[in-house]
Structures are given as structure tokens and as C-alpha cells.
Length: 242
Image (cartoon, rainbow, N blue to C red; front, top):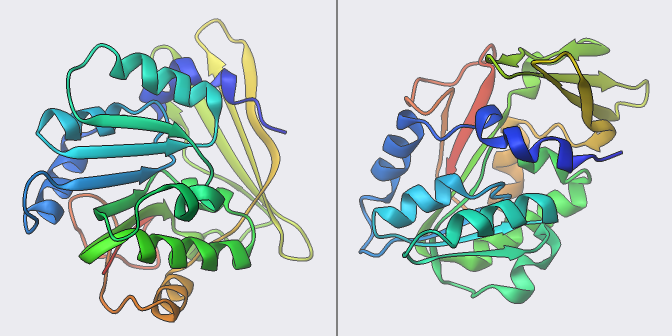
């Protein structure tokens, strides 16, 4: 079950654009001729893409959930910059977007786990490789599934004065992972975002395997946007693949 409309109002509080994130992408894009061409897969409300465009980048965001895309386009209409948003799933990117065009493609905020089949994960790596320009980079930010081992794992809450955002991951006997997410507002009312949503627990070794299959050769792994070294106990995994 998906109730994406329940997170739209609070999306930028759950997944804020941080100074560390902006600095990270600034460093990773410094080697490219301007305007740097970015593609974000799963762009949400588009606030990070708008921040990149404000710095002169050429930015494309794709989003499969219409409620989030509508929010991104509302933000874009108030700005004069090179940024565009499309309603598009990961299955469609290689069909509709320009091959060999993008310097940096990213899929952040755990969105890659929603590609719930290893065959489709492999297609994701193939498609992004096709879309990247020469010497382009693929950047992923996802959970570190190496440390999620219990049948029911409660992820750290995201809380502020307005909301509490809860995430739980369940592992079934056959290894299937299911995602539950809900938002509790300040008045105590709780709304689901995902309930029993099948996800794929992509891990570091699989990232290397799948990426090498399609021609990626270089890999860097971090635990956060500060580029601290990744380790098995890290909460998150950031992969820079080229």
C-alpha cells in the first residue's frame, strides 16, 4: 500500500537539503565543464535540484509519484533557471532521456530500494551507464542493509516540532523485505506512507557486481556526505561509481 500524499507536505523535513549534501555534490562535479548536467532519479519535491540549478547547473529530475512531482513543478514555477521535472519511472529513463548526456546521475534518500527486483536493479545500472556522458558518475545514497539483521528492525525516527517520521523494515522467512513508514503530526494523528511495501536490500558487494557487469570500473564508498569512511556499522551507504 502506498499513500504518498501523506508525506508531500512534510517531504522536505524528512529529506532536507543539507549543506553537507550541497558541498558533496559540488566536490563531485568540480571536474566537469559547466554547466554540469545532473539527472536525479526519484527527485521528490525537487528542492535539491533547484539548489543545483541556482548555481548554474543543467538539471533534470524524474519522479514516479505524481503527488511529489506536482510539488516539484510548483517550486520550479517560481524560479528562472535550467531545471525540468518529468513524471517517469526508472523503467522508462533509457527510453525517454538522452543517452550519453549526463555528467552525474543520482538516486538518493533510499529511493533505489523501491526497485524491488534484482533483474530491475541490473537494468537500472545498465540504463544509467547508457545515460552517462564519458567519465560520468552514478551516486547512490541508501540504507546500509548489512546492519539490518533482525526480523523486525526499527530505523531511527526523524522528528521535529511538527512531525515524527517512523520507518520499520520487516524480513519474512523467505528473505523478502517489507517497508512500513508512517508520519505522526503534532496533533497526534498518524498517517501511513508505505505499508508492507516490498523493497530490495541492495548491499555494497551487489553494487560492485551489478555495476561492473555494465562497465563501471571505479568505486568509492562513504558513510555520509562528509565522506567519512564506510564501515559495516554505518547507518547509510553513499556510493560514487564511475
